[in-house]
Length: 190
Image (cartoon, rainbow, N blue to C red; front, side, top):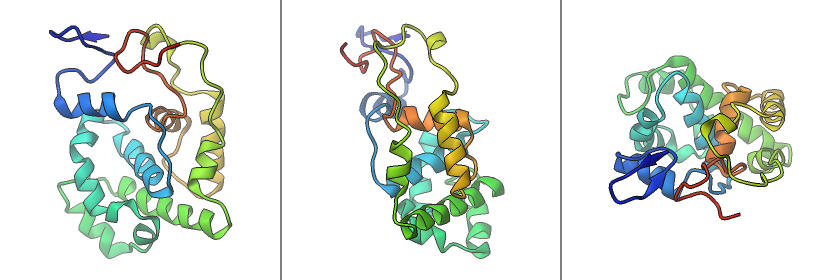
């Protein structure tokens, strides 16, 4: 827990205005819509091996580079787009991560073509709410049976960079689970 000079307590993100806004106004709140969920999945995959603040600082660059994460637009990207994105300092320039965004957009479109949506699939793995907020980060798992099952189903649907730990982070970010630590300004009231 991080206590600021104004006695505001955050479980993470204190000290950087961008991180604080993300913590206070976004992390743990429900996210719906295929483009919004595709964005979170792509960003969680891009974060692998990096600090989350690095991705937050590049988020607007990602939105610009990946056409606002509109699945059809990104699904149409080809090799020339990958080459262009490899030169874009506004995003993480890792070929596998860039290619995964395109693959995941195509999988999102395929879900729609099959009569469902990324939103429906993703939210079908929401667990029952916890009885109480976790008391410390030690009480927050790296993955859960639900994130393992979600990762498996996404992989079956053609998604990549969607392992159980990455999907648990996406579940936290998108409000399927609320892991704000007890006493945090954003923790739910039980």
